[in-house]
Image (tube, rainbow, N blue to C red; front, side, top):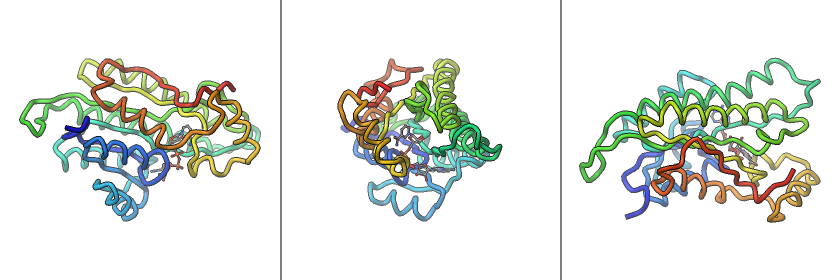
Length: 251
Ligand code: NAD
């Protein structure tokens, strides 16, 4: 039996990049996977490819996040895994930032994750039965932090601050939810080749590749494999951790 057979997983922002790679990896490990995207029709279409389900959701809408997590859990008999992946990276030097830029990043990256963890915590705390009739409680939450949340990056102060906030969220939620059997961890990717980083100048990408011990940028499936590990029982005694997936980046 595959590692995640009988488990239900929700991946926010799952229509491309790391989210899509994660949804594929979880589905390949046997999970029933629900992805969310801002465009419901697109999310449904993308999910078909790996036999999953798609729902529309703008994670900047705090209440909508809670409602969609609840809806997904109700539709599939519970929730075992949450990957709060949806995020934006808006660059801008400190002197150029406007209030709305700051709020948008914090709404999507931080408040969106808080709402998802809150709702997932409620769903995962509930007792449910697996396919074999065994009673189960608890679950695994994975947040998408970033190396810039630790090291910082010129021109990315707000994005970096939002990712540092997710580290604190993971550690705090791990403490609150641990007694209910819910693990909360974060991954901190380095520079991964997705749409998010495609807009970065080529010389920046070259420098980042050279700064990694492995001498190259990362791929979305390399982050997804680590998330799958954290989602499953192989990581059953791992919580409140931040796992770097950065090729040995030395900034
Ligand atoms: P991406 O831009 O390819 O994907 C981001 C996903 O989030 C997309 O599906 C997008 O539609 C979704 N999204 C954005 N705003 C949303 C909103 N308001 N509501 C719902 N969905 C929304 O980027 P990616 O590289 O796959 O990034 C995924 C996560 O990993 C992000 O949180 C990002 O910050 C983080 N991360 C990425 C890298 C990297 O190098 N690519 C490094 C560190 C962390």
